[in-house]
Image 1: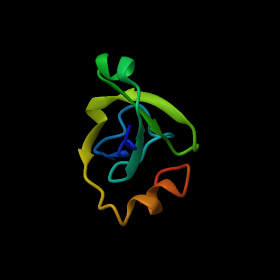
Image 2: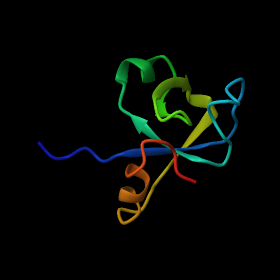
Image 3: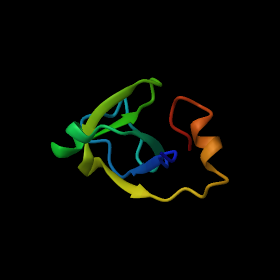
Image 4: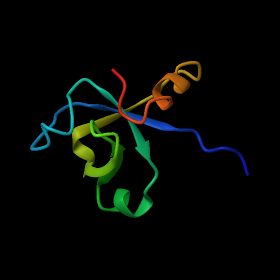
Length: 79
């Protein structure tokens, strides 16, 4: 079985999560099919921990393969 490609999203609004999310910042998505079925995304937030947030706060983005290690090297989001 091949390695699953990491997913990233861009925060477009923080909503009521201003302490945890920053608009215009890229976040790494942790796969959670049950959460996604409920329109939630599990992302690594400013604390470095993964939490569920409404999917409407984000848009998916493609990160070039060369840049993925930069985003994955830090447990928190990378600007």
